[in-house]
Length: 219
Ligand code: TYD
Image 1 (cartoon, rainbow, N blue to C red):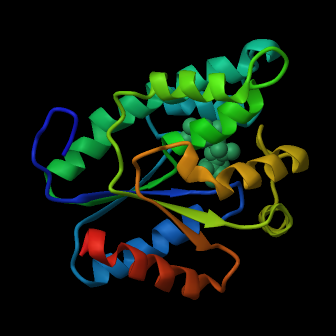
Image 2: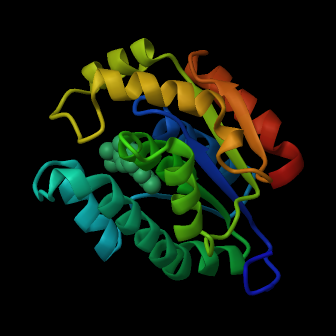
């Protein structure tokens, strides 16, 4: 059920993990399998393609700068605003029409990335997590969150293969810390259904595991 208590025919599934975990690949492969079974599927991602998401992408790609001490908080606010925009403009309308919505990242990414980059000094990680939860309190809860666990080394090799410039959060040290955070992702979203899968298995085996894990939820 959505916040407004409206009925929904579809299902809302989120894919999460560190950069290079394979969330984009697996969301697309799982979507293809659902479509082959004639399910209505909408694949989307965060940051979204909307106006706030576009601004965030410019920060991630170093095209827009912000004062460094304030950056984690500003990013947490931008991601939370993008999320509500994404929900209202895309996710909830699709769910109302009975689509299975697959989102490549959601608020677990904020609880991992912005809490990890924003904690330090006098501010505890728990304090940052609590604030980010508060910012996202109106965000619809997913029916399930798939966390693809991969080691920071495997993810780094995949990112290197992909090539191109490094995004803001693609540093070795941060990704190693995030891999640890994602291993206990359920602590960050109490009450959510979080499913860990081995993201280092062969690509089609990971899709098989996703299909099996989501069968009771997506049908
Ligand atoms: P990614 O998902 O890899 O998208 P793309 O393939 O388009 O680069 O990158 C999104 C980045 O944004 C990733 O490093 C995680 C980060 N992010 C956050 O820090 N907080 C959030 O709330 C979300 C949704 C993403």
